[in-house]
Image (cartoon, rainbow over all chains, first blue to last red; front, side, top):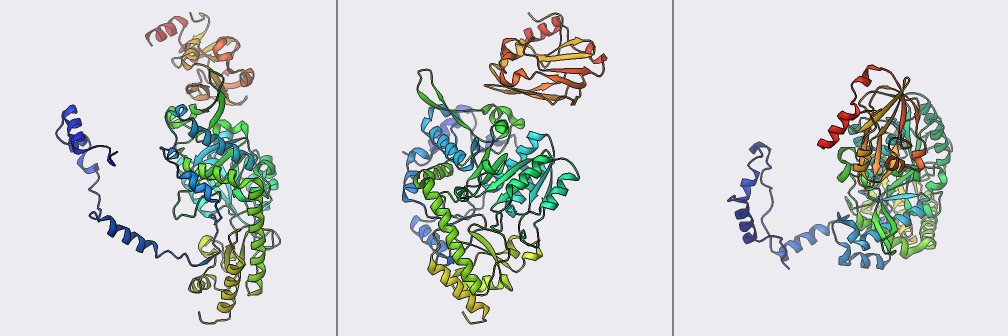
Length: 456
Length: 126
């Protein structure tokens, strides 16, 4: 089978059939000024030279570090079966087939993803799927505006800043107002959503469509989601619960927190860390909102002969039918990544997922003790699962110096949340089941040496 | 045959006027074109509609279409039966499949609506 779809001969025959003498003539109707200039590309290279160059570039990645970086993307162990299954050629189709019912296997895989995520989140409906956690959060927020007919959103600063920026971009185009709810600065609730501020923001100003909050939040802290939900619902607004999926095996699910919509990043479910993705956006909701959820939905039914059959359902609100009035105009999906998440969840099982979360929490607790002993106590008092902030004087400089000592010490909060001066001395660090006691010792020793002013 | 006692819009809504209240639905022609109706989204009672503005959507297995207010006025009732039995729009479009009742704000707008004969001609032309 040829690599290219059309040979020069094929093209010549097609041009002859339509009666023009060159491909360029087909673009005559587009004014010259609007046509793209030629792409500036390097000349072709032999495969041998190209491979050597790419390997050289790849070798500049630091893979030798003891890593404590999380902040929205998490290292996990993935069973070998996940990648092996993904390599099967049957899955490498264009995302959702547009003649879907002939692809029963693809539809079944999407249906199983939806079912697993529905169980994990405690929600009734899961769409498959979205680009990433940021896009999913923005879509979830827009759902609340359509459902309530209101045009103002409240977003906790405990939601990842990248998600907030994505939401602002979506909201700007849609003419919606987004107000950010601050985090409490002092006391046992420091670092979590300021509930008094939330209450007054709900009471003042335009009616609020939805309140968006994360659990755990971007600082790793657990939020009082049921309380946030009660305040939102009391003002006629919906609650959007931003999830981290692994944590749902041990923390309250959106079904239990009273959330109307759940959304978040699916990367922790068997998807490797990759700069720029592809990642996986999760959106789930309760049944009354089913007509507001964007993206593909696959249902289970019976065909004319009574056999089990999978179908695309609720399609009439999608952009291929409803055009500019669709529930979303960005509802392409990440079918292969959703499949990875489904295989991961099926392979590891509910007990396995609890083990993953519990082991991460145990390692994080060891990390907390080791860093405190090395001179970096926690920045906040509230409970966390597997990610937390520590106080380190001159955190950005220390972070950079620790790289030379073989440690990726999370992320300086001055970079992640630069607008918040109370976090300026913070490093956000995380542990998962792949964090080893040796990694923790390396980090603590390096930090102790650095804080003592020792040479690397 | 379309009922002779109703008024119609080019968007295929019908209007039955009783006193100052107009009952609104979609025509049999529209329901047939849509196919099996699976969901009808209607406004809250108390909302004020402007003539020609969208007041809801009707969803069939193959399409979702906007519903347009034939007259201006306040919504005084919606057909709650459609929540569980949206198929009434197909089976009885001029009766049990009604959608909402509006307190007519400007009776003059009624004169601008189509009579049965004119609507029938419109659908015959396609």
